[in-house]
Amino acid sequence: MRPRHRLRRASIVVGTGLALVLGAQPADAAPTDTVFPIPIAGISVSTTGLPSSGYSYPTATTDPDTPGVTRLGLPYAGVHVHWRNISTGAAGVAYLDHPGGTSVETGSGTVVAVATAPGGVDGINYRIFVITPGAGVWTVP
Image 1 (tube, rainbow, N blue to C red):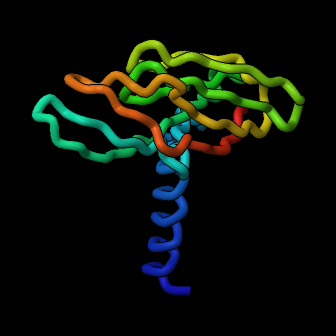
Image 2 (cartoon, rainbow, N blue to C red; image 1 turned 45 degrees about the horizontal axis):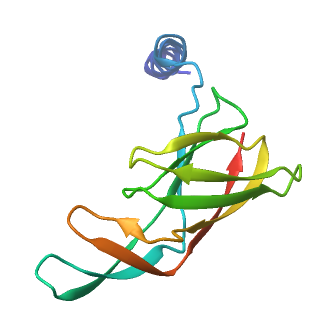
C-alpha cells in the first residue's frame, strides 16, 4: 500500500473520531407543537358593521421534560377544549380563558380533543360566532 493511502485513511479515522468526540451533543428532545388539523371556524360582524369569516387552529404543545402534560393554546379566549386520553381513558375539559393558553395534565398516551366556543369568541373589537368546532389528535410523552 502506498504511503499516501495510509495517510489518507489515518486522517479520515482521526477526523471522524474527533468529530464524534468533540461535535457530539447529548440527545435533547425539543417540545413538539401539534396544530389541530380541523380549525375553529366562524363568522363575525366587525366595528364597521360588515360581516366577515375566519378560522383559527388550536395548538397542543408537549415536552419530554414534562411527561403527561399538554399546553393548549389559541389566539382567542373563551374556548373549551374537551379532551380524552384514549390510552388511559382519562378525560377532561380545559377552559382557555386567556390567549396565552393553559397547561393540562392529560397523562401519557394518545389524546384526542375537540375545541368549542359555546358563547362565541371575543376578538379584538368584535365577537366571533363559531360555526364549526376544531379537532385534533396528538401523542403525549
